[in-house]
Length: 290
Image: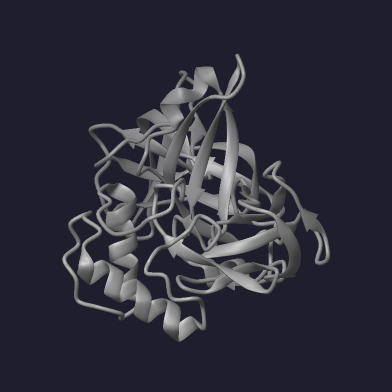
């Protein structure tokens, strides 16, 4: 394996910008998780809700419109339980009716349309990372940042040298060592593009979030698999004996007797060494110095 230094955190923050004018009257707390249909902030006491989707809210949506943004709005309405409508990307009368019901339940003005200042599409549940603006701030038309959010799960990021690209294979298993020396399993989730002339970023997903405890951000070590040898015999490195005639051997223990046999060594890893030779076989006991 190869050990590289990394950072534990929630990934790169994404900004949420003002889409209109008014006074900022409320922001979800830093560190809070905002789910589908919940407010991220309020402007003039009117909430701006989080909905899930990849297409940003770039236009007002209303009857007769067609597009991927309409489809993801329909998906959200169905998930929120407002209607069993066709998810076809066409803003027909059934979609208008679902939006009217959604607006009525939230105490909003019932227009049947969804405006850019009413929702923000996020990739999924998000964690509020930082308040950039403060309650009471006046929002202008310059689309200033109000807050930033991140994913809700912690990841490890590692900057690898470009010459080490062979270490970073999406789906590859790695081991993450935390500051208290505990280890957790990780999987290479993303191999980024080159961020400098010499380095590129690797993202490691960690399934067991509970094992991370209360750590929010911390330096970590990440062990990458450098090479693998399958179906080989191994012994502890300490079992190797230097032979007078050159090379290495191991002490075989059998029936209260011992004998030295020559072996050929291969890969060294994790305190063990690959060995081969005609005089050794799986299951043999070898002597190790105390």
